[in-house]
Image 1 (cartoon, rainbow, N blue to C red):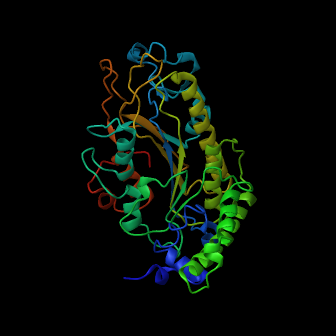
Image 2: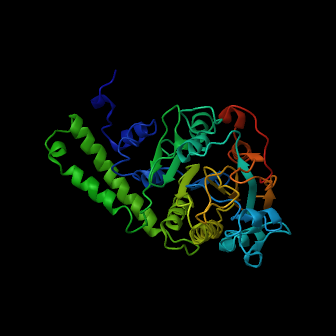
Image 3: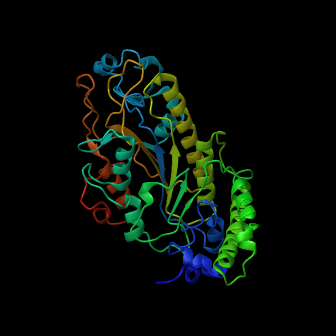
Length: 417
């Protein structure tokens, strides 16, 4: 068995080569979550024009589907929600039966421009209302009674994500923890970028921490051949590439104005990495706060404003860079909310909800079957589209791989691509 000393690289080239097999990148991700991204991108050719890219947007906490895509023409909607039902005159109509929340005006505009699809009533059999467990089900693409150690994207990395330049990260996560969907059987380079990373100012804490660690006696008092010497050398490489990565983000000139919140800035950084020629196939961004048990009205409206404005700016930016044909953006949440409101003018954990898909190659409009609102108090919506059917569509028609091999079974495609 190799010792840690034998596994540590001695040169920058060795470090990148070793990192591509999963050693190094993850070992120092706690110190510099985003290091090496720009370094690797600089060594690789610009992304192929036909290479498809998936951007996943997690709505953490459980988004309320009925007040996002509103079934305003169904009288049961107002009966279930005497306080939370949205005024019909304030809604953004899609057709005679459904409308978007008024806070989704930027998304509604994308819908009219043919760049937004909405998959209705997405869920899974035997739903679980635990945040942790339901998110695990979504991220591993498992059945509710099944426990998998790998994520659905991790299995994509294992089986179908090939042809990338050596060292290119398979997935980039712009949030505060690595998503379970990235977990794989084999080791692959992935990156985590802190959500406070905002170009010229973002990442200074990472750089300062690396510089501080490099001055520690444990590293400075050992020669190059020792374990600590290898660690120091590797961290010096990390510091160089971290600074170079910050330059990419700080120098990026977006083709659209992004809001100043961290969610929009995460999307801005995603656009910067894509535009830089980085050949990563999957990006992951998160927006939290959707667990709206109490006084949901204003909170949910503000969240949908943040979501809609950020996604619209991202799509405009991609279009300005002529990258919109390469990028598919998809939202998901661990579950929806109960159809009926609770006594605190909020909604409790539920089951199915709609999700958004954005891109210039998306078939715009509504997809799937609408939920049946004829339910009793504290009963849940019965899902009509399995979330794994959505994944299957993305894997097969967007990422170009054998979806049953990744998901373990065949699922009917959904017509948004």
